[in-house]
Image (cartoon, rainbow, N blue to C red; front, side, top):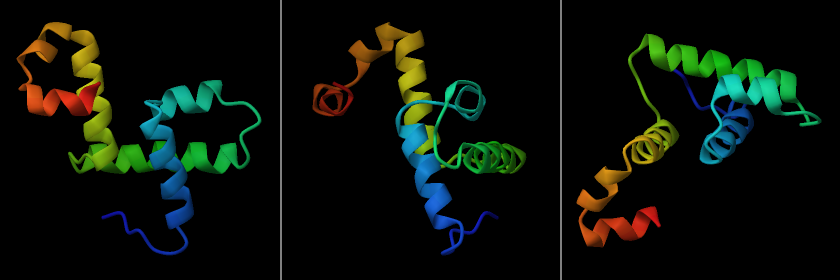
Length: 90
């Protein structure tokens, strides 16, 4: 289990921000230059994702990222989302 204590909270907050920008851990480690603490955040992000994968888990940001990827890959699905929910995806 990954605990969100005061030591890890700032790093998890940065990881969440990165995920909200739809950047996975591999892409983050390859493309980000000049990001303060990049090495630590990159390692923590990769480790965090590995731990989630080992436990067959997803966090909230992963669910959002996967939903966006599915809608990008299969745009016809977007038309099947009820109108009252589609407001959240525009």
